[in-house]
Amino acid sequence: MNIVLLGAPGAGKGTQAALLVEKYGTPHISTGDMLRAAVKEGTELGRKAKTYMDAGELVPDDVIIGLVTERLQNPDTEKGFILDGFPRTSAQAVALDAELSKLERPLDAALLIDVDAEVIVKRLTSRRMCKECGYIGSVADASCPKCGGEMYQRDDDNEATVRNRLDVYQKSTSPLIDYYRGCELLVAIDGDRDPQVVFADVEKALNL
Image (cartoon, rainbow, N blue to C red; front, side, top):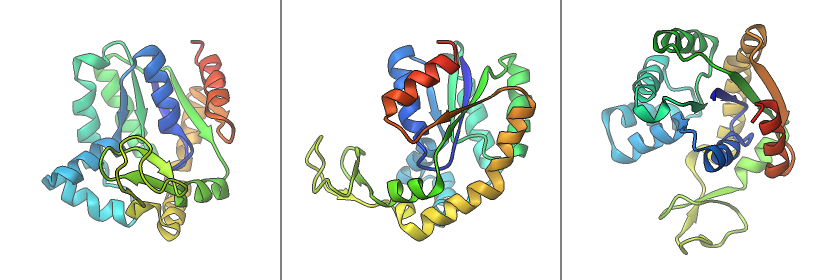
């Protein structure tokens, strides 16, 4: 199962990826997680990426492609992978196809989790993260229900940045939908439902 997860920030790609990992053990490769780890560690890549991430801009292709290509050569991806957050542009999709061709591991599907933009704005601006364990909760969580840690709003979850991220997505990433449709790999799923209902449709679409 070699798949790319598509959808706007906050559409629920990470949730569906986690369910696939839990049930099938396929490695979830999230560029967002890799970049946030680099930011937290204060690496050169992390410092470079943070300026783009805080402004809701896309991190440059060369940085992302290098990260992903390196990750796909790890042994745990030999039986499949779930790419989340990459590719984000048609140019990245072409670069990914080239890398996968070299590895002789083509994509099986491009899975689009489709959610209305206003639903996403409401979702993300109410999202909170635990400073201690990274648990993702909501504004209703006074403290982390997992470890009791302090909950905070990520810099990129304020409304202005969320709307900017959605604008960037529409301009830069939406052409990917047409790209993968043209490759006959696109599978679209309505993501504005209970995650388990969405997951049932994901399994059906991927013939799992």
